[in-house]
Length: 447
Length: 81
Image (cartoon, rainbow over all chains, first blue to last red):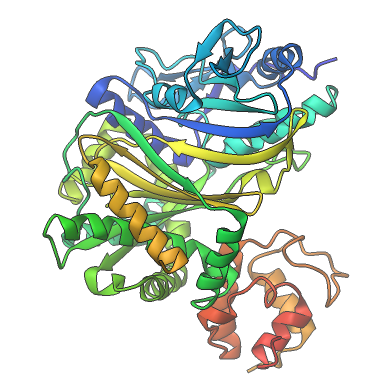
């Protein structure tokens, strides 16, 4: 028996969703494709097609947002979800790589080929379902991969991990109760939110005074969406932890990786002959609400954001960069900028995406930040199996819009660290991403 | 400055980052299991300096030091492992 949730005709977006809607609009205004991303789990054993098909049919019955459409009200263009669509199964396709024998009619050269294709996202004229799409690929006689293409409008990277985790839970227990999406409410009047937003607003305006750069140089550009990622072996990851341990304790990781993102971008700008530049790095911090039974929300974007400015001199090495970031972070906390940012998000979620973005970009000379960045920690909070097999690795491959045109992301799975650079090929060349890879190897492994 | 005992540390955590900490939370119980995250740790770093004059160094920013009332008190008193 499924635990079908009652349909809610209208569902408000979260504060963070407001900004994501704006970024999705920016991405679509460049080439018609939204802010989609790709996540992959590599699993041992063989996929069970029948049970996976049951799973993707079951999810929308329990989770109305999966078949909702993002609409805007007729007066001010304020976005909201309309949960009126049919609970049709989430699309899933089954493939095998050409070197593996089997019944699948779709035969692909390699998973990389499929990744490259799926990373391009799809053109969207409406913001309706499907918001996620699965591909299952048999990669050898002993391994398979599941790729989830997902729209950032509906969920974020942590939400993706929670969804995978819940799918695994349902795999083992079809009667398991699904988390219900809590409504992000706001009981404060607009003028109160406006007052509370002042500290963060001022900080963001001050960022615009710094001549920080991105690889898109503040321009709205389209391009082929690309991704270069490297998973370090367990031995290398242990070595990296030793290297980072000399700089600071394990709770410093968010600063290490934000510093790494800035330093990798610095390497590119140095190779282009620029020096004395500033870099604006964002650091998202998860703030996920729970439902009435204490289960963490899967859908919507739930983040507070910290904005840091790093100058060339702050980026001489990873230790210096991490310590500067920590110092700035303490200042943010003292001034309660994270709470101020939350108020700003709640205030601006009732603003059309284009207007919000125009204001941000006007204050920042066309830019948003020097790059996107996130450290998502251990995949699925340490989940070790997925739908009948052991997890071998899991990777997020976010796509980026321009500006900024690039992003550096770090995640962990099964004691293996993965560093990913996502970019548009019109903003970064392959040679430049290799340069970034050299920088991260040098910083993390001391090579 | 107040004394940095395991109990004052638990009270600090309850007052600043984990308001729902149970009344019988023991000196060895794990703050992370009770919901402490990296954001909460950074807030504690700020409060430790403000209220106990303890400036936490980057190398001291470890999960082990922030795990319980006992370990936090040891950190503030300069006796961290």
